Length: 266
Length: 304
Image (cartoon, rainbow over the protein chains, first blue to last red):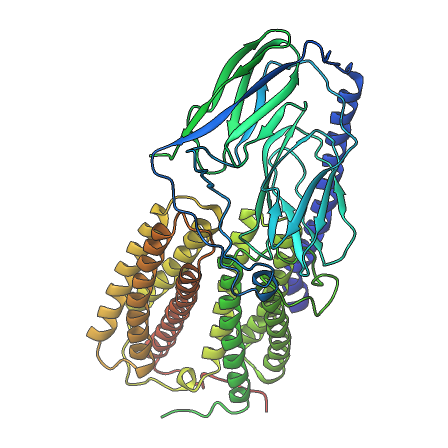
């Protein structure tokens, strides 16, 4: 009687563990297959290079920014030994010209109903020096993402999406790259290494190729757009306030410049 | 005059040892949460497909937690068998098996947290079941102790004190639940603050009542004193934890001072719960004995 009562809870939990695990995977697979099927049925939009338009600009910041924080790699000799200089957080990286690096800029509205060819060329996400390279990555739905571990230490790669399937896989040194896809649109998917908790990256998954990430001069450029009216959106992991969308109308072969300004939430 | 605890005494020391390792396990678990290490080992029950994974980064905390947990599991199995062999009190024998069932369930919950990527309800349940298991082992240790076995014919403990002690232990458990919800869901701090207020109020009333009572056994007064000291420390740790979180809000987390203070906060919370449970148990023991003075049966019965 003692045995039966005592073992009841763990046995029930074990059953729930396996039943739940199997169930969730099946449902997800069905959903994801459905997404793939819908996509395949649509006609691919081809943009005539002669009429392709461009949007470019810069993302500025306003007000005081949090100071750059040094990453505490000292406790991890395998990571600290890979750097000769201190490494700083990439959460907020201001440029000298009062612009911001690592801002994801994309066409948010204006391309509904159009389908664009999925690139077969993989996007690269590397783990190098115990940081993710690049910090901000844009890919198309179902575009392969090639994940590398260039470090002599073990990492785990753990995306935490809201709209795609979560997974968490280890990557020992010198293992072959992982190839992954994200079948649903999502801006943005945080990617984390739980072994080295300062390691964070973001992946933007879009149904089209019209996105860009600001660089060392805070500029972006989105090329090859068909003429039309668009809403350009931006996403930054820390600064959420300010101008985050711009409406723009592009004529054939036109190039327009739009600038954004972000500030710290008050 | 104290009665001998006989053969049961041997498992008492083993139960104390198990309680100590369980406390260590709670500290190890708090370090896993504080260092955001819960998913640094993606597989379970093995770690990176092995019993000896690379000892790097946060893997140290997660795998260390698993190792201590496995050891506590083995200790609990041995304790349950020992209690079953040596103890004649049916309720205490049952408690040994319940503790074993809970530690197995806790291990499975730990696995679920890893395989399901730390769902908040499971993480909260895992945190609370840890405290439940700690309580059970503390109960086993206390029920087999010389203090429990001692007769208290001259002592005086009323129903009110016992009820207050049980209410305090219950409030501490509720407060640990609120703390776990706050920690694992990043929800508002208000419920946890209200819980702290309730625990402080009840503990204050309980301690005052213990020290106002006459002829209480030393076990109760020591437990009440410990409760007061631990509670004062806990309030300071809670405040420090909150201030540190605010001070390091825009820093790259986890920050060592935050991890250290929040881990201490969890650990002291467990000790407060233990003190509350001991007060509830001991006041019940004294009350039941003094309310039935004709009963002279030894408190700890053992198999020959």
